[in-house]
Amino acid sequence: MSGASNETTLVLWAALLRDIKASIRPWFTQTRVAASAGLFLDGLLGDERRKAGWIACRGGG
Image 1 (cartoon, rainbow, N blue to C red):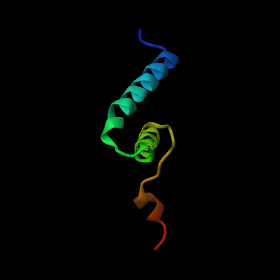
Image 2: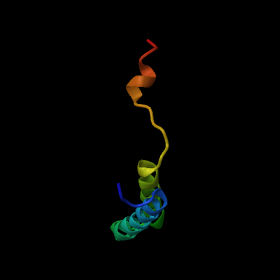
Image 3: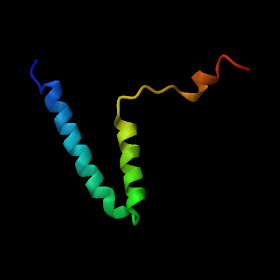
C-alpha cells in the first residue's frame, strides 16, 4: 500500500488550513472577528476529543 506519510499529510493539511483562513479573511471587516473565525476552524478540525451533550446528560436526572 502506498501513500503519503503521516507527517507529509499533516504538513499538507496545515498548508490547506492556512490557505482557507487567508481566503475567508476578506469576509470579515474586523480583525478580531477574522481571528476568532480562524480559531473556530482550528478547534473544529483539531484533535480535541468531544462529547455529545446528550451523553453528558444521560446519567443525571
